[in-house]
Image (cartoon, rainbow, N blue to C red; front, side):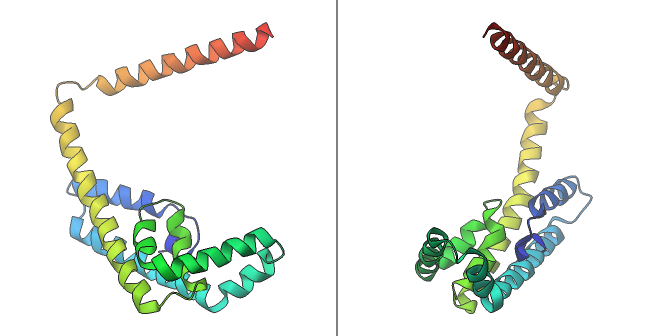
Length: 177
């Protein structure tokens, strides 16, 4: 909820952790989806209203001194008038962008009912994809890795060896200069 209100916190990380617990049977997956969706919608709505009520004034005061930033905001407002709904929905799936979708929709004066619809659909799909996607990945991982318990250790060891080799080569190259 806090991430979606415009404060960059690791909301997706918490959803992934809850999804893993749901995949293990420690949490109800439908409750994880419901809480993730509810938190995302409430947070985005807060971000929307912050942007709608005071965001433009704050933006003009801070960034209005730079013509390129002001021009970018005019482009963003025009973009949100044409593609705001799909932008709000798709922004849900892009870390970092989702933090600004609500406030920018509010600053751009996007119709609230339209924002609410696309925000809710996006949050529901996002939470569902995380919960059931992680459960499916866990099933696939368990199916194909069974019998290869040491595969992770071998892969990590190889990656570590490659890192050491690359570091050695870089140091050797820097000393050769």
